[in-house]
Image 1 (cartoon, rainbow, N blue to C red):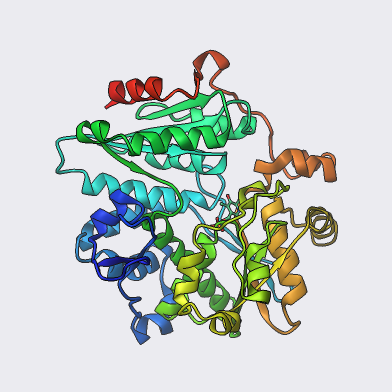
Image 2 (cartoon, protein in one colour):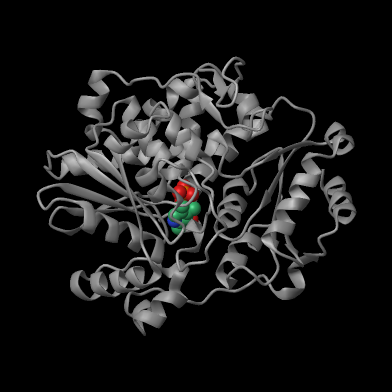
Length: 434
Ligand SMILES: *Cc1c(COP(=O)(O)O)cnc(C)c1O
């Protein structure tokens, strides 16, 4: 498989280039040159396969030119090393729990797959690869754990000091070794600027091999297709013949784009529902046909606080940039904080199922937009424990009752590396690590 840039479809890129560059040279997103279709036998029988076997078949066409079957096999076994259960919540409503990985969020899947592929492609290089990532919270933990002890790679995670939750800080600073966490005295934008300055520093790039692990990287998107097949497999095994309606809590729209890619490969799906929080650029787009990005609004589902979703152009391209074609497959609604809070309480009290705010937005949207006789799957993107403070406010004592302990130890303020948002300081730190 070769890859192209959505901005200028003439030039073709190898998988290695795509992973190491992140963004195409023209600043657009990479896409596979075409979407391969899986053979009929696989589509008929995938429910009889293990998760890692499904992963192997789904991902093989995208990597086979550059990665042997043995290596792919090892990488998917390593990536999908935790459970992804489909749980029945009520009649016709199922939760796909993507949060049983090391940092309790679905981003573990993408970070683990990308890290192992980068490690593989960097094997023959004499230079180490530096992965620079700025995070406002969730991505940093997944990247720190995903890349921990991957040979030949040094990782720097920059996060705004005092602006991530204690548990997120614990996940970012915990791994150590080749993972260097730096708390920046400033905002998330300051962190992002430092990373951009480093990428734009030609002299530094001459000396050091650098890439990013942010969510636009194809290497994070591709493995996310796998669990949609696995969800459908579990539905079939439960004896449900109906095609699923998937409701996905969406911010940058990477997760739902992966689901749409899976359907292009042959996964039978009835339709998609994208739940957003108050950041409603996509629901408005589906109504008006106008893409009108806005400044980010802060909500309870903060990993979805995105005013200009980075995967929008990928998603739209899958439907030939044609509004009515997209609307045939996708409905999207905006869910308010009040609706999220109501939903968390109602579903816990009525159905004994606890959800984090992101997941609750998807449950709400599914509940609104699914017919009674349809089979609906809402995607559970984070463990409720990760947003324990919010749940405790709504349902006092709920964490303890659910058996989730809220004790963890920060690596200690003394151990946290703090830096001012000063590029020359950042640069000399990178040079020392490489
Ligand atoms: C990142 C994230 C999302 C949004 O996923 P996108 O792929 O950006 O749409 C939803 N929920 C949680 C918990 C997340 O961390």
